Length: 103
Image: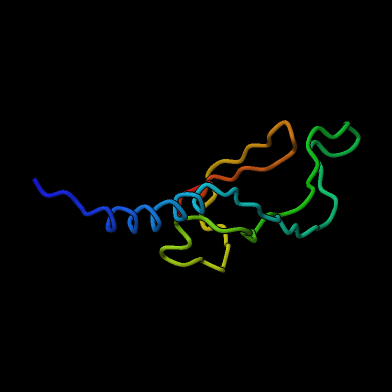
């Protein structure tokens, strides 16, 4: 059975550990909002239950991940085909994008 030499194992470990640590970093992003007029539902004279705040059309990823280090980063940050949206308790927005295959 073949076993790597001690030097080869050290080099492999020295290459793999930083890549794994870089992939564990949290990605932060900013959501630029494009505000438009004041839309609400239902309209007057009823009290509004839903109010239009703005459109989320793209995002700006910040930070690095193992995936972006290996294949490069897609700088466009466009939302292609949003299929679901959720707002967390901390007011962060999660958008599921079927075209880009991610959240």
